[in-house]
Image (cartoon, rainbow, N blue to C red):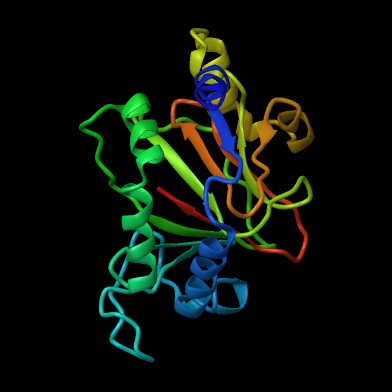
Length: 223
């Protein structure tokens, strides 16, 4: 109840220890095998962010495995149907009784899943400006490695989903790209988490990415 209350008040929440850590570690290892190259050195492998091509069956990879997209240091790829380990995890997750209850409370009985993707924020990633998405959408983030203040991560403007001020919307939307990073950083809170946590945010909440130029890639599944 406190997690749901925080989500409705802040627009985002991190639920501690929702998953078994071993399950997430296994999931992370599987994704490293499927996509061993997600950084700048291999950017020519990945097509323009608008194009997605199906890979041939190489190294026992599934015919449904997409090459993935590399754009400004961020790698992304849809991951359902390309691994029995991932699909089994997804089934276990969405059949979990606690998650079923949570989903019904937040989005009702007729919710639909329309993305299930792998995202890697590489050291060379450029920040994604603050923005809003479809107001009827809720996003789940499953961190595949621990994320602290020194790591790149999703960031949120707390309570911005409740704002009714048009000026605020313009500030965090179109104007924010002209403001210096240090000034924008005062406005948002970064998503930090440990392996096994579950992040949830309302897409109406202003969000973007806070990028740190360290050598650690920040890996998550976004649903």
